Length: 506
Ligand code: AMP
Ligand code: ZN
Image 1 (cartoon, protein in one colour):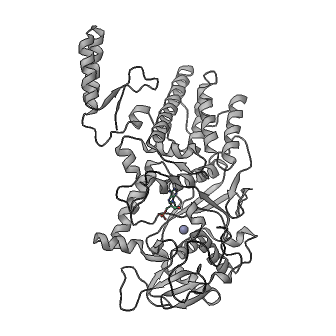
Image 2: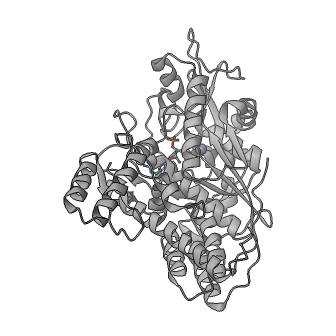
Image 3: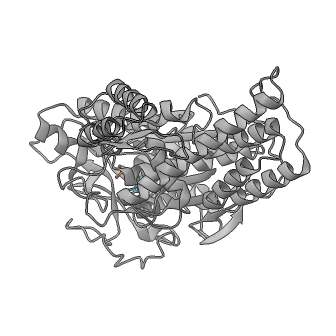
């Protein structure tokens, strides 16, 4: 496993405080292993594409990881790929999502998993989410899952015809994470005869007699497949060791999946009450809130849904979506709208231009000297103060919205030493992950909408002819050329302060 190396220490050492869902409090980050940060993020169930709401969870986990790196911790991040076990309802009901997709598409579960894992990883790259130190694929950990289940079976589980079930009354404080009432916990009534408590959940799901599943393994409880919650407990323990530092996921996981993981971890560790967070397997449990779409386009069962690809097809750079996420606090709901995405895109263009301008100033001020990556620069007090404010913002439970404003303030100060501005901005960019240093704004940010018919070269050629017509004061010809462009879906943006002469409408 390759860990993400720790970058140079941040400019100031504001204590990092994060919101722990388990205690519902902001807490100082105190690593289990000095100098290290071990983070496990619940990953996708790869039976379909991820929607942009899902992707918010990874932008959040990535921002957390980048912040931990910025604070000088050596990050060890694990994200899992769920390719077995996740049923159509989180509460253990329905079919396995993978098997169901495989059957309906006439493919093998492996083919489905490989395809959607690839699509997911491409989306992550588009969003500039850093690779974790390790991807854990659930089906590669089944022997360890059987071992884990065996270790807790006698004291904490009971067997029914349909599988091995975890008895939630055998651990202290079941459901504390969700603040749920244990016995009648909402949303988890499952029609399984013989279950002792409604909240009890499957550790192992037996293949019904006479049936064969695509994905099944032999176990002490017969042929079958692991329960979804089991896999994250096992992969977290195996790769990061209990207790590790932070476990992340979307807020829906706070209700069922993570309380169940916690119960298993408590059982495995033979641990007592959750007054001590470490008994849960991790010191902190962090959850991002949902991306909401009032148009109902976030549901994967309702035909076309909001995928990153759809945003790109409409001409939006994927990092505009990353920026949209960063503009909100990760614990707030974020409402999706195309207008909001458009505004975030404009802000991204503006940031790119501001960086480019600072780089130009740097070369004008000192034409001979480039800036070497990771070069230590001594900062003037004003820039130090901005870096300290940035550090404060990120250390305050990842206040990305405030951090963005500080980056903009830094870039807007024309009187500051440009070399230092560029260096400080690149440090901030490393934390925010906006790729602001990747080249000319237009070239990297222009995305051709799928529906566009006119080619970029043609647009440039018409604009050149229009410029010539205007120079010759032939305004009739110039207007005609403009109309031609408008008819082809091109917005002509004369004098655009961001330097975009034209834009293809989406
Ligand atoms: P899944 O593939 O269903 O296991 O979900 C992957 C991740 O996305 C999990 O961490 C979920 O909690 C998270 N998630 C699901 N829906 C949303 C949403 N609308 N907004 C933000 N996160 C979500
Ligand atoms: Zn999980």
